[in-house]
Image (cartoon, rainbow over all chains, first blue to last red; front, side, top):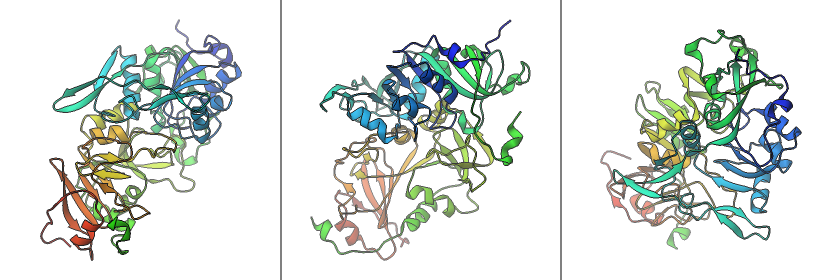
Length: 249
Length: 224
């Protein structure tokens, strides 16, 4: 029998070693897998390459990982948290800054077996011409630049070559999931979650509700369990207003 | 520069710019609104014009901001503020959201600007020395069918924001199709700025004095 459900986050995430690359779903705190991120912190993993759209606006989730010095490199479009930039300009964290749509498509492509694709996003800007610092040294000099992209003209427009992302692991959050790993998301908390899940060689999903197989109609499954290896329960449910309680199972 | 010493004049307010732009939105348009003045636009969209508002995080059919007691952590706009949906709204993932943008299915992206150049280059994502973050800006300007920049005509120091060449880092090259400011509306046609109208009470000379890029005067007759 397929049973991807795991009760203990720390035990489940133990195979994620320091130094791993980890794709993470969420847009700010919306749809962010905080139970799994907290478990990774509690396991004291460090030197991580996180692929996630934002750091967030406080010291929860990705912000906690930053505050505890666990991030080696961030691949993101919109870090936001001021303390992140202290780490970046101070030479303690690298920033691979890429356009948000390019980030989403790189994850999707990686998960779909597409090694690279061309896009006009970012063409002719410092994010693709090799003039944006990936990281600084401790004395404030640029230690490394984001590599310049290969350029090619299609239909008279300049495009840049972007590579698909395959991460060692992925951490995502869904509204409902079953033991087969089938997931259903809720409203805009879906965002990067299906794409991060696809991009992970091994994917963990935390769900607000574990449902029985068959409870999710096949036509209503947003992400098939094929992309999910382990399912855990989210420990901290966001407080919800009565107006939307009809969505709860 | 003459621009810095030009006498203070009063064109459209921020709300006035938003209202002027809103009058150009057509029934059925799919539109992305950036932060700042663009967020004032929805209140000025005529009742008989149905517009689908797109948010980068996968919302098609964004409604007004959520009021107190209405907030839902699973529903935010692209600025991560609590949002609502219109009836008929749809949710997609982030890759599909940007497929809509990149694939030319977004009719208009409306965004603030630091600078717009003579050929329609846009700078709006990064002020060197500050904290860099790009979000979806580069995808939006590269993919949307129309890119409408909305901004004050000059900066706080009185310097023109419509310039021959952008000095701030670019968001996209030759991407802007229209510019709406407190003083004027420009269109960009074949890589050339055209002054299409001046705000009420503003003459072409006042616009010329505060614009640091060459442009063609192509004022529509019958406009204010």
